[in-house]
Amino acid sequence: MLIGILQTGDVNPALADRFDPYDVMFARLLDGHGLSFRAWRANHGELPEGPEAAEGWLITGSAAGVYEDLPWIPPLEAVVREIAAARRPLVGICFGHQLMAQALGGRVVKSDKGWGIGVQTYEEAGTGRTLRVLASHQDQVVEPPDGTDVIASSEFCPYAGLAWRDLPMMSWQPHPEFETAYSKAIIEMRRGQAYDLDFADAALQRLEQPLDSAEIGGRLARFFLERRAAAAA
Image 1 (cartoon, rainbow, N blue to C red):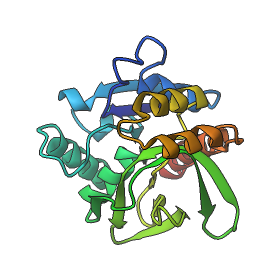
Image 2: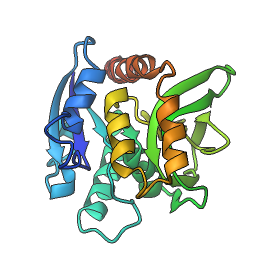
Image 3: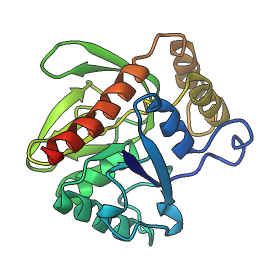
């Protein structure tokens, strides 16, 4: 199954010699399930000709905000709506989560709660389980689109995971594709700048906690495969 990765951000140049680009991070997260991948650099204006260019789609994170006046964002929103209309499986992560919400009738803002960084804990809807996943965001979905269910939440981020009832689509605010070393590098780079020193140091200490990222990666892979099987039935 070919998964089209709509890449909306680039690893910071200061870290690019140490860490893989985002499409490679996702390929590693979803490895072992028989999926193949092709990336389009959407933030550089590179978009697929249509939803049929891949069997499933994934939108990555970005340093940009979905509400910013950037020339590549409106065309990408149009692609989201085209994928939804074609009923192709679609997953969004962080910026992708927010873009899907905005493109389909929700609202995204820069939250007055500030940054969520490092290990974040979410409650899974319906099970009461908690999931620990790395995150890096200050923007949040504050009004989810109609026809969605909340599948993960926290006090800090009430709409951390969304699933569409009538469309093969789901999205997550945190970053299951991030590895601890990458999250640590981002926090250290922004410590004393974007992040207050004490806030950053507390986040660095939390990085020792175990993560559920691999489990979420497995869920995403199964989501793609199950939606393809359902479409073929």
